[in-house]
Length: 574
Image (cartoon, rainbow, N blue to C red):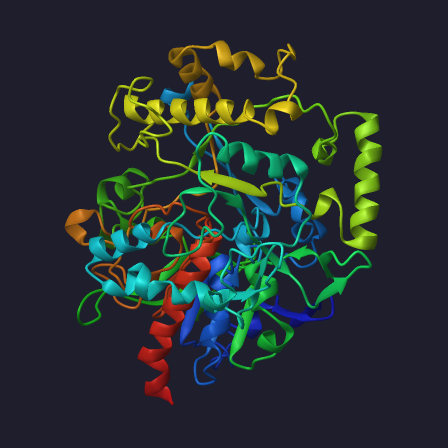
C-alpha cells in the first residue's frame, strides 16, 4: 500500500507489495517490485539525492529503504531554530560514544536523524562547504583528479538555487548555482550579537571574508548563508527604500523536501519504503570475480516478518564485511575481511563558553523560566504568522575560520610552542590547538563592539567570565570537561588506496566486493574545513550505504555519484 502523507508525499508501508516475504509458501510468483536496479539503504541526506537523480532516467528502477518515517510531518524539522527539540525522541538514533579517557571519562551524545532527510532534518542549515585545499587533498589521496576543487565544485553549484541579497554585494552571484533544488541565501534576521561578533573579529585582525565558498578559501569571518525551503521569494521595496527579503515559508530545507518533491515521488520507477529496518545485505559468495551484493533483507520491527528485495546501509559489519577479528568477537560470520572498516574516525570537536549579554538575547528559545516560556510562545506566534523573529534563526549565523599556527593571530612570543597535526585529544598538540581557540574567543569577546554588549563584571559561577584568569592548564581542564561533537563524524569507510586505510575506491566501490558502494560522510578521505552535510555522498551500483552527518558536502557527493552511475548504467539500458 502506498500512503499519502500531508497530501503530497507517497511512501510504501505494505512491504508485501514491494518485496518477497521470507517463508511465504503461498507466493507462487515474484511480486511486481521484487527486483530493482538499485537499492538505497537509508533515505537520509545522500539517499534522497541519489534516488531523485537516478530515477530521472526512467529505465532505472530504484528502491529506498528508510528506518524512520517522513520528516515533512514534524514541525520541528521545519522551524529553523527548533531542530534540537527532536533530540531524545523516536525520530533520532540515540547514540553515545564510549567513555573518553582524555575528556574526563565522559560519554558524548551523538544524535543521528532517523527519518527521510536524515541529519539534514536536524542540522543548522549552514551552507558552508569547506576549503578548496580539502578537496585537492581528496584528489591527491585517491589519485583521482575528479575530486579536486577545480572539478568537484560544480556539484555544489548543482545543488544551489542562490538568492542574491543586495545587502551583501561582495558575493559574485554569477559564480553560484541558480537551478538547484536547495535555496541558498541570507534568509533570517541577523541577530545584533552576530553582527557585533563579525566586527569584533575584524578588530582582532581576523580578516572579513565576504564569501566562504570560493576558490579563495574559508579563512576569515563572515555571516553564514543558509539552506532554506522557499516556494516563493518576494523582494519588497519599502517607503524608506530599504530592501527586505520576505519569503512565504521561511522553513528549513532537507534532502527530503528538496529532492523528494511531489513530482519525483510520482515516478513509476521509484519506491520509497518507510519504517523499513535493513537487517543484512545478501551476497552471492560464489560469484565470478568475488562476492557480489545481490539483495537486502529488511523488516518493519525486530520480531516482525522479514522481506527480501534484490538488485544497502551502514550495516557493513552485520553483513560479515569488516575486520575479521572483530566480527568473530561478536559472533558474525566473516564474508570479507576488510580491516579498515570502522577505523579512521574523525570529527569536529566543539567547546562552548557562556558570557552574560547586557541586552536581550533569544535564549528563551530554550526556556528555563515562566517568563521565558511566555517569550517562547510569543516567538512561536510571530514565526507562524509572519515567518520572522527569533525562531527563523538557525542559531549559528556567523563564523570565523583561523589557523592555530597563524603568527599574526598567535604571536610567537605569546605562543612559542609549535603545533603539529595529530588525531586525538589525548595528544598534547590537539589540546593546545583548542586552548588557542578558546583564548581567541575570549579575546574577541573583549574587542569592540562586542565588549560593550558583554557584561564582563558578571560573577555568576554558571558563566565563564573567570576563564580570562585561567592558565593554559586550567583552560585545558575546562576543554576536557566540555568537549563535545559538532555532529560531523566521518572517515570510517575512507576513500583511499587499501594500503592507506581505504575501504572504497574513488568511485565509492567497496574493495574486494562487487555491486556494493558506500555513499556518505564515512568515505571522506579527510574531514573538510566546513559543514560536512554540504559534501555528503551517495553510493551507486547495486546498493548504497548512507550516513548523512555532513550535509553540504554530502549533497554534492551524492550529485557526483548519481552522474557516475547514470553514465555507467543509464546509457546501457537506454
